[in-house]
Length: 225
Image (cartoon, rainbow, N blue to C red; front, side, top):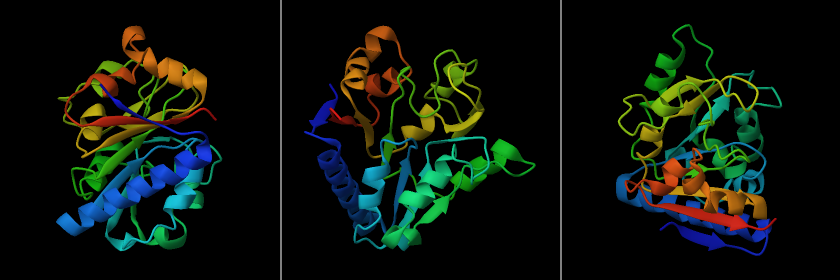
């Protein structure tokens, strides 16, 4: 069973999740000398990111990356990196070691994989969101390579994919990469997403791959709005 953390509103949720992640990062720095965090884009985590950015940590020892990214310019309104830079890589967290998923080199995905190799593993935590179609990361229903993205034995940490239910080609961590974490957290709001997540296994949504795996503890952090 996945543990649910339920809050009265998104403000309370943002504070609690930022505090939880700050403690997780601090614990890993004390035990291992460094910490690493992979986070998702979208609008849901913005408030949490702003709170986490002011957390009193030695951010120079924290490695940070995105779970997925659209293949757009990093200054595009659709860019997860732009959102991250505007909301998390601010204040104290500006000192974090950020590894971009922007695919600008001739070597493409292979170069991104090598860049991600620099991040200490396992991740201290991976924070996932979820879309109204049951996708998480960029594991979209109907994508031609969805089975490979969800293969826990996939040797690749990052892959490209083309959704059929959303715009833009994407770059995404694979399930195998996400499972290389000490903790996985699903951060969602709203009654509709709560219901969808509760039914994800039965309806075989991609997010069910996180709920049913037994490699890494996965918890759900939710507020009604």
